[in-house]
Length: 166
Image (cartoon, rainbow, N blue to C red):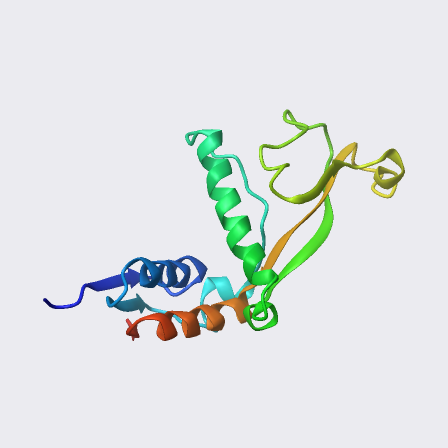
């Protein structure tokens, strides 16, 4: 029987991540990543991704939380691996500050990130235009580093080719 042949459209973070996931799920398959732009010329190349989810009103919160937890766990494993530097995936701590108190003071993802807590009054004084905030540790992907790492992973895991569409 001929190997399964799969085309993934797009060579940004989503496209290359999809290619890597498919290569794990379909061993022996052949994957073609099709795009009009590849790294370093994708939209993803000019961004660093901070892992903080947003609420999508038409998607149940338990589903969003599951997706976030799976993504966090996946990236956390990379950040704690010997490949962290090559992948450009790191832990980062910081604040999320608000000019007004949000409807949900504790977001659905609070127990997924590390060390989530409300900011203290002393911390908030450093941001006089803001009245509320969270402090936590999450993950950051440096896309200009992460994309080549994903490309390498997709090629190592299965026959994979990159097709440029002009």
